[in-house]
Length: 245
Length: 100
Image (cartoon, rainbow over all chains, first blue to last red; front, side, top):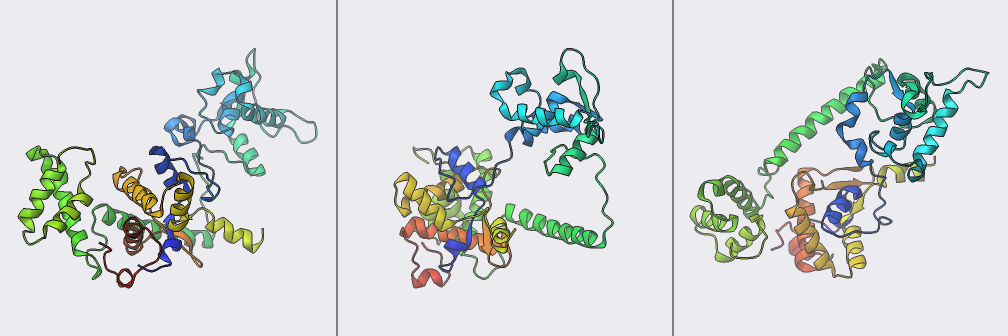
């Protein structure tokens, strides 16, 4: 450990602030310099039915561009979602034939409910967004295959990096990432093994984790001092609820 | 976009352990030690899916996921704050001993 570790090691603000928030601590985000979070609705699986769709209704397209899943806000008054109204306005501008170059987004006719009945070309929406730098979150069914040599090299490099990271992640999940390092602390090593043993062992014995871990340490490491047993058990025991362990 | 903005864009999405502990202490009106202990417990108690990944920031590479060695150093740094309550390191800590 060096003094600079306090400054060079840290977190992605969104990750750590979310964890703290889940514990009831809400920090101001100014110092943390947080990047905008992806809207929760966009991280769900609702997009799948839209992948490859040839048309999307005006209301759904405006809702998606505003960062919501299409099903929910449409039922509510527009006034509650001004950003959807703004995207709707932008889309309406794009489907109108202004007379000099035709509409940018092809759209169908509609009856008494324009938001639900007027269908817009999905491909045109994607092109319209790309031309303006807007993000259209629905994945493309047929993404363009890069042929540029530099792009292919970059893809190969990134694939190798992904493979390496996956390996590292798998090792980390199993707690194997540094066992061969000469600096790997013995007590940490014992703690990792105790945790793995307790994770499956308490299912057989029915004991509370702390009890199991204490017995396991005494059995497998009889030369550990009582203080070391307490230290390791405290670290390993995931059951932090009050009461006898 | 200028060089400063380009660098800031690459490095912006990062909060150091020092900045986080200081912010946590200042906003929650607790000591460095209490802030670090709370953070340590939050991380230990978190499910694997919600446990945040440590990152490393360097001048050249920007912000990247911490290597296994860096993760160990990060945990030690946090443990040091939780046990000692200060950012200064003693010689023992700098010699790579586990700080307890």
